[in-house]
Length: 147
Image (tube, rainbow, N blue to C red; front, side, top):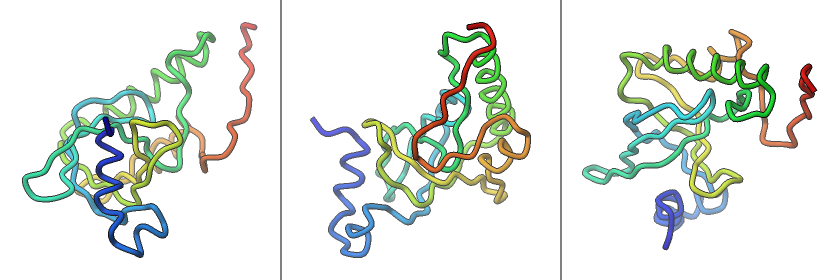
């Protein structure tokens, strides 16, 4: 059975320019269902009129500390990032997804996220020092002070 993200990417692959890049330019409107952590959302995306699909969205360009880390210090930082994202999204119901592509983990997509007023949560979280910039490469190993 294909995951919703696979169906979305496959259904648009007939457009040669998009198939070559394996990316959907967007924008695609999405309603926020819930915040997963400081860099991931669950949304109901509407790629076409009257067509809605639930999909996990990894926010492009950032990496938040893991809330399920063995290290209490990292967990605390992850919860702080998630709480900040929840606060930013408070009162925002619709977001725009752009430059949408498959993520390295199946079942979610990678996208630039913007609010209706043009704010970019990735930039806001970066400027607050709650997340680090991330380009999809190998993550640096973080050592816990408790270990």
